[in-house]
Image 1 (cartoon, rainbow, N blue to C red):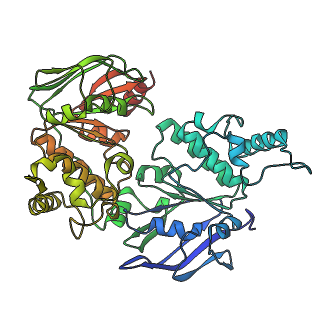
Image 2: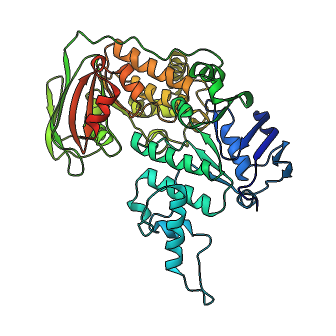
Image 3: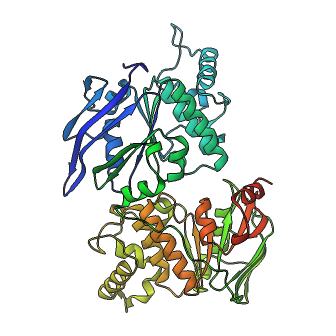
Length: 497
């Protein structure tokens, strides 16, 4: 096994091809010990393929990999682990009912000669490990009781316990609050001090300048750039990733039209919400911000009829509802795009056309059959309107990038005559080019008179798009601001009050 005394991992002219797709084309980069190397690129750029080659899940077609001057072979996940390469994926792979210590020592429990576990040794070594990476966590706590950020720390601790020389982090902050991100960055800095290399994959450009030493950009499977962080800028990175300059600001003027379309009054649920009240005007984008567990998603689901309301009511253009379900809300002009695009949004076994028209099949019915020609024509119309990148509306939805999947989910609701659309984390996991397109689309919808409830943890999205901002904590609205008269600091302060 390689120790943490190595100087660099050299990926040299790596290529990988799948049927009809060249995922990687002569990609080279050096990942140095004690440094954070950021890997960026739009969806489909080749990042995941490169990670899977390092993890032993894929084999390379061409090229070589070196630890310092030693050429190595990675033919299986076991080879990768033996070489000290550990991937911390976006999806946590811990056992929820096991403790922190049990998860860390899962592959190698300390036992005596009779095979009996040495619990004291296990917990002591865990504490020593946490001290090494600079994080305080109860080693006998069940994983199911931990926050997402704490679970990620356990994943990292497992990697260090397995004597990792290189830790690959795949979108590690996608589900973290700002405070949790700070804790993770502290852990990463401690890993650097222990001479561990970090390959850091993210869509969030602002993070790169906080944590990375070098950054590599891939586009369409090719190496576009590799620079020290002090020799690049946000504008350069965006241009490298997308191949063009991207306009990231939006012309939003506070709406003059105060025609009320939605009233939420004292909305309460048994699990989270407490007397939530607000009004929404026609053509308004009303932003909701809050840290993890604040209640934004619960509010979105309650208004849409997913979650049962125990008290309060909703009025849509003066029509009151105190007991309702999703069918009632859809019939009255409310659509909802979930934050869990893969789990609750798309139907994985269906193609683009079927996903797009799913909630509106009654519009395409002809006696007992669905008019496929009409369905296909409408789908193609929205594909063109929203620039969905696909060769055909018959393409399987899972073969589209995250940004294009999000456009399909938006199109799904725009087929109907909506008054209000609820968007929960609409740009999560979406690359920079597609993100700008999605935000521009939301802005255009509001200009055309649709009202938008925007639930987001992306501060830039919140401030650039919203007319007003509601800040939530513990299932309640804690503050309300005009977006043109508030700072990020004021919003954060309200979110922890």
